[in-house]
Image 1 (spheres, one colour):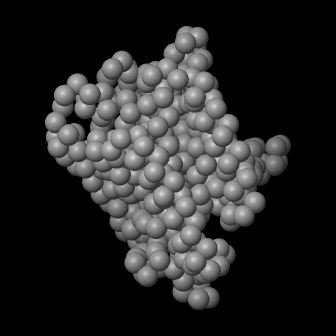
Image 2 (image 1 turned 60 degrees about the vertical axis):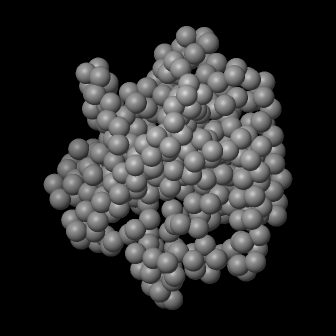
Length: 352
């Protein structure tokens, strides 16, 4: 099937947003839309990672399913998908190990963004190849309702004491994103238990991708609005929360992702608008992993001193401390855009 420019563009814009929010010049001065919610709630930044997982599901609908329909052996498709998922997962672990070895204040962490992407890609590939749409919808409902029950039965939904944090602490020990210095309890926003509702986010992307393949534009629109309404309604009982990846958060973010997919498809594939972000999209994992490695290396090259020289010293007296922090992030994204743009022009598309 012909590659959709809109899908590459949406994936690319999502990766660019990841770099923007992950790489400010000064973490103490970040505009609120570029910060994650402290706990409950949903800022624009909280949409970024769910968007990427949603797009992973859409991509499976356009990559694996057409080959299956053309007669490819299911076992071969799954074998390739599992090896790719494993490579993504191991790359995430390797980056975390390197960070722990090189960065003075870092500690070893086993979960991470790439690890969750690998797990969700493996799961959605299995569902795409071996199950029918009805089974996939049943799995989505089961994951969301089952996880809701797990959260409720687990007692508190507060930081450190919720069942998600307790599970990941028991499984990974101190090798998680945060450790409470008072109690010693851990928490990881990309832990293993939270990967269950994250798989539901990816499966919703798979279903949206199947509708898009069949040109069901109205269905996409109605589904996006329905997810937003259901997510908002569910949040009255179970708050939107990225750290716990609550079911209400799954539906809320999937609703916005579905509408974004529809808008990109309508404007780029049907109206001929330029596919902004495509260069990031065709090298998404490479750009994200490369930016993570750059985050590790920059502090060893005196990032703080030249950040003050190039950005803070000149901008802060004129615009305040938030503008130079944002300017650094924008320049960081621009540098990576130049890198992936050059790679795309030379037809270099790195696939794990």
